[in-house]
Length: 79
Image (tube, rainbow, N blue to C red; front, side):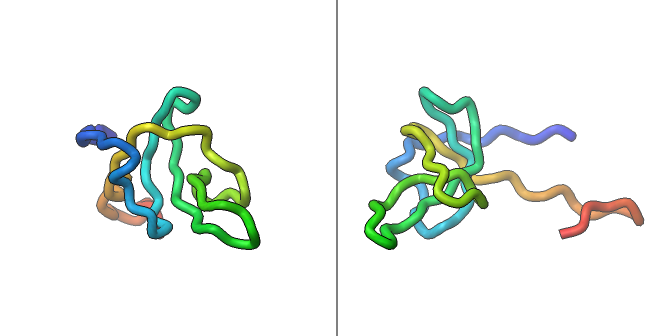
């Protein structure tokens, strides 16, 4: 599978609504992360997607996740 690489943007422009994004930075080569708003006295922060309270160390750039491949035949990926 070949995925076209999109343009990356600075992390300040990333969505902060819980959307999963692909990010990179000095301490991470790439990771799926999302923004976690302040709750229970903890400050807002970037967090690895679908992992509870595992903060991401200083992401610097991001891009949207690519679309899933189209379903084809009986062995297609399930959502």
